[in-house]
Image (cartoon, rainbow, N blue to C red; front, top):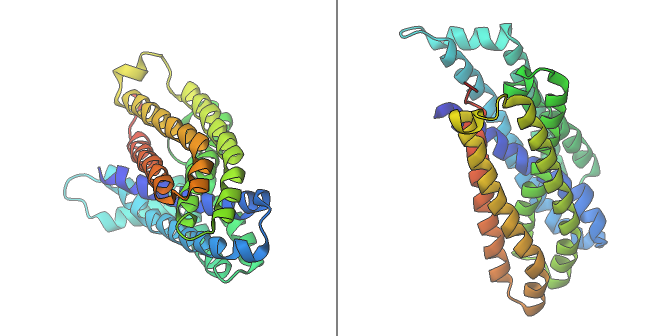
Length: 287
């Protein structure tokens, strides 16, 4: 349970961070808004991007503890095992990189909050490097062949962040943005969400195909059951997203912003469930 919670923290933080970068470099660029209209939304995105990478930073040492717990026998002192994991294993080296780049991302988003472009540039680089992290650990790193699975894992993380992470920031922006600004952002978001959802679907299918082995593993193992549960909830997210796509602009035009944000919140709650299941999925062996 602890391992699943730590992985949930990692994936949720990374999703929000990728979403913040997507807001800056895709959503705002496609929206056609003036710089003055973008500024409040970008400050909010940078603020929560900072929260996201801070969560990834906190998750790094906790993941080392999880790894050490898996190696410990009853009565073994944990701290020496944690030190050994961090200093003497491939997992430890990956976690060191996660800690270093998440700390760099914390500083970058802190600068971006003041509207500095160099902060956003550094945040984008650091966040992309952090998105490589899940491919270095867990099922993707153990797959054969390894590289295609790792590429699929990276695309999956980026797609989830561009879809769900951006939706989170748009939900935040919808509180105070003018109707014209919100309408422009919704129009810009829909093709981004569609492309990101396609990335999630294709990369997830590819990754599962490389990992699952015999088809019976889908219902005969806990890993397969978690995967099926994830797919079911993800389908719910997609269905709500489609409904929002069809009705969001009309709700803004009618002034019913509360209903729009409520629909977004429902989609986000389901997405949160997907991330929680992912946390359990990544800690479960295929056996």
